[in-house]
Amino acid sequence: MAARITVTGLAKSYARNGDTMRVVDNIGFTVDEGEFVALVGPSGCGKTTLLHIMAGFTPADSGEVVIDGAPVAGPSANRILISQQGSVFPWLTVRRNLMFGLRDHPDEAARLADHYAGVVGLAGFEQSYPHELSGGMVRRVELARALVVKPEILFMDEPLAALDALTSLQMRFELQRILDKERHTCVLITHDVEEAIHLADRILVLSRRPASIQATFPVELPRPRDLASPEVARLKRQILASLGL
Amino acid sequence: MPWPIRLGVPVAVAAAFLAVWWFAVIVSETVIFPSPRDVAIGALQLAREGTLWEHIGASLFRVGAGFLLAMAIGIPLGLLMGWKALAHTALNPIVQVMRPISPIAWIPIAILWFGVGDVAPIFLIFLSAVFPTVVQTAAGVHTIEPQYLRAARNFGITRSRLILHVVIPAVLPQIIVGMRVSLGISWLVVVAAEMVTLRSGLGYMIIDARNAGNRYDLVVAGMVIIGLIGLALDLGMRRLEGLKAVRWRYGR
Image 1 (cartoon, each protein chain N blue to C red):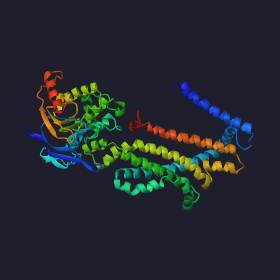
Image 2 (cartoon, each protein chain N blue to C red; image 1 turned 135 degrees about the horizontal axis):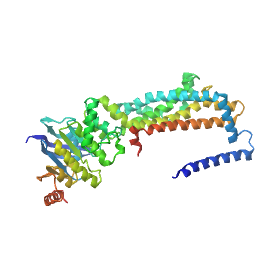
Image 3 (cartoon, chains in turn brown, blue; image 1 turned 45 degrees about the vertical axis):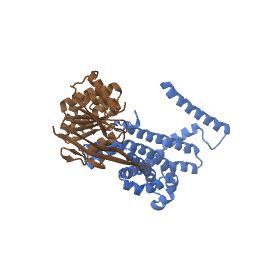
Image 4 (cartoon, each protein chain N blue to C red; image 1 turned 90 degrees about the horizontal axis):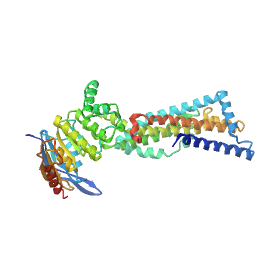
């Protein structure tokens, strides 16, 4: 399979209080077409910076990200970032949020928006404002807004971290179901090892800051995955061990 | 709070306030300071004569004109200062120095430049409303959550759509707060300005009542009317804060 994303020698430092702090240190990996790669690492290790560089929001100090043969120079609607804090526009209704990135005729855009609202289970809430919805529902809006522009790549920065454990688990199943149908290439950042095992084809374990890749774990388990199976438990133990736990 | 308390307590406090006032007027045997009853009669008299409505109309016109002018200039200027660092660096010192100058201090200059017609108070109201608007709007742009701007860039929208559909709606709640503050100050200022420059308006009405024979009943009646209209203006602005597209910012 051809590599869709190739990351080579990526490094990034920030100036802070007169010091330079290195947050990403010589990272290189590839992501194949349709593959789901999870990056797991401790909080504050530089995961978000890495994803922002890959999505084209932050320039790297050295190294490069090549997507489909071309180096990334800026963000593109072909690769949508789902941010940790959530970026659903609170001043727009669910439908208007979903229509935001669409260039189609307004009627066609509204039809597409409502279709994807249905896909993520928000049928009937098209006219609601985000502050009228629960946290889990707002995350669904964000996912639907990304899917509706039909991007080839999804970058997800701890998309479920802000949710309670039960909602987070439920959203994980939903995400799995939707991605099975749409087959995007996905890069997920998380500190939840179980979430990574549940969703990913391959897991890269990042070190403490500055982030570098210290281990790779392929997840060769059939989907849907049984989180209570001994294989999952064994993999989880191995990954946690490589994180020093 | 149950509604009998929510309604009953403020009414009781207001009644007690009026009773103390009335009692003080009787005990002190003042001949100049009016009782609540004198004020009510004075207010009715003003309303019946019809001049009251002209004064109210004149004051509201000046506030409206100065306020709208301040919005038309202050909001775009605030957006510019919030969005472009260079504009902020260039203009912020002037704004910060001009902002604490009371509009009352501008009265001599307003008269010098514009005479004693309607333009001078409109100018003063413009000055009092424009700076809070600029500052609130610029601060609003500075506090836009970066993930909203990132998401907008991610979808590849044009610069004009970014300003129109992301920056302005994101700042709108703060613009509305700025408008509310500005309108409140405008109403304070118009009364002061009319006391020295004009022959109409509620400020003039108050000064005129005092000069034309110590009619303190009309002075206090004028004050009460000013208070009630100010309250109505504020309530009107508060309704804007209830719009669904801005309510997210004010907490649930």
